[in-house]
Length: 124
Image (cartoon, rainbow, N blue to C red; front, side, top):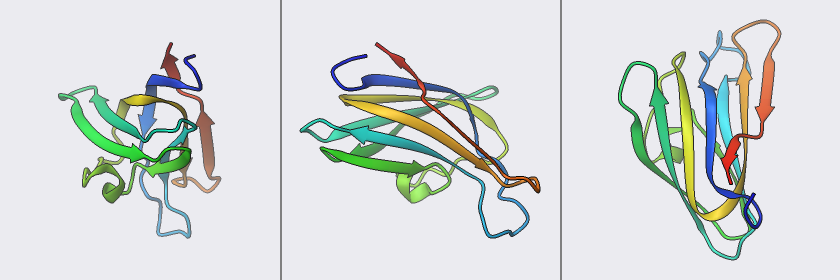
């Protein structure tokens, strides 16, 4: 790992589940970013699919010494980009500052909700 974190992260198993049946909770994914540096981190996200070209250059900013939870089902947090549900994809996150990432998925499509979280693979 770099100083505190890394500048390139990979999330191979991303999947935005269906919302569910109008229940209280909504299925979603989140990329949680921790920026402990003294400078803002400019993130560039690339979404890779099995059957189409990547969706590139999705830009997100995380302030210096801040944490940000990027909900992947909220287009306003992705510069207006709306990701399709029920389609597997992978994500590369590039940053111009060292950051740490965590990826989480809440799936409410079944009676027993499932929450999965992991630390993505980093290039370091």
